[in-house]
Image (cartoon, rainbow, N blue to C red; front, side, top):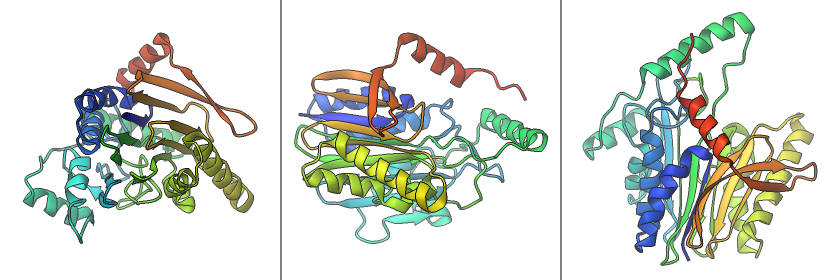
Length: 318
């Protein structure tokens, strides 16, 4: 059995590409890297890679990670600028015994020495988003932080290997050097081929408070189905944060076990995800969360899919 699951509608083209590799007995490492690169390279997805939304100093700082569930090797970069595919740099770092998590200038120096593609990741469109947000903040007292749609994936290949990976430009208008959950093992991602993997999207500062991706894999190791594991972990953290702090930020998780079974949970409205398995074509689902914390899914309609792309590619009125 093979399969792949990813956060958000934006991942479906990448997941489709990854599935073609998995069908041909490709590795979970190659498939997940290819799938995330597809999202990173598309300029209209403003929360990942090229065209990602900048920090408060109008610089695009990217975070990414990769984990091999066979060896538990981890590689990650944080606050890296001017490199096209941070997920590939993270995967390369996962082969290092030490120095496998690098940030800022150190990550950039490593990428340069390893021959990764340098690229100005700040597009004219991202600059327009930035100028519009600065204006809105002055006129409407709008909060700067919106848009933190990390692409997170879990992949299982026909050899039984599980991988997890993430890529994001983080919070729009974040402080320079801010790092969220995405490159933090156990919070933004976790993979163990004995059991499965999980990945997160949402408010990193809150996701990290529960080490939530690790928690989901731990629950799967105790026999829980991925759906039950996701709901258990998300609802518990949502409740804890609400009780202790009065509010919980956005928490959305996806998971797949080593049998290709998958699960999803969220505490927000409007979460979407993409999934493909040996027995299922690439499909985008919309999630509805009930009052009891249980999540149900419906296949996204053609109209919803078309509106999604129209919204993403619409001209920006400053």
